[in-house]
Image (tube, rainbow, N blue to C red; front, side, top):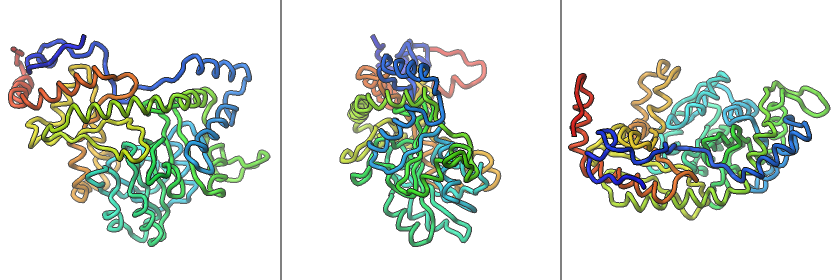
Length: 411
């Protein structure tokens, strides 16, 4: 039985019993049929073929091609290596325009290869890169735009493609969040010159650790496949500089097993999304990021924007309250990549041209979802959030007092 939270004095932060005995994580792994997974792993062990384009990795690539309707898929050991291989295979140089409101790997993959990330602001509604701001950042040194389909919401693909074509730039997408999503009826994976997915354990579809690079360009696909395998082409000939980015057979087995449960994973995520929306509807100062329900979506993130000027409590204070209840909400993507090193030292005033990013970095809160979260959990989390906002004055006052050295909590 989940303890009810009717008053601020019931909160675990002030001495009450935590709402949940077990911690609820953002991005807790979904796991498909365990027996089927273990059968696949045993089969790989029996074959003694554990890497180097094994049976399962090859099958996983085919299954992904079929699902997305793309010509080429190359699975890799993780999404970051996928970005690095894709960036190098596409021949990017100089400066690349990328959002700051993203996971740091989007920028680090560029920096790692000696390319300068130029941070662009994002759109209010989708949190994805703003095409109107992209053109303002193009210089003679710009070689590409790297868009990020954040939360599974697609970038403004057509606008970005138009800019890239008019200005002679390459266009790539970090699709780490967007596996199984669509844009205007076409599956993500079919846009730009290539797109890169992450299959990290925290993603709704995972291969323990892994990713994939997809493209419809034959020559680019051949180069990507060689670069992912030390630069080997056919017949043991090195045709390019490469790295070791291959996916192993155990990871591929997890991926194949997860694909069999993909509709179930998405259905659970969608149901949780609808429950959160209903549970927080009409709560002033709390916006639940909405998805276009005419498109395919994985619904793997429940994203709130908390406007302290209306709720009376900050995102960070709300997060502290929730975490004491064992609801491990997370403040994605605080404080924005432009405020992390080495980018902060290089351009300390970048925030002045990133107002939406700065706001979102201080307002966004992601809540637990996935197959480890159900009706009762969502209902209780929404009840806590509603109560905290309704009693924000008292909670804020007691939080401030609790932070004074030597303070003894009282109820």
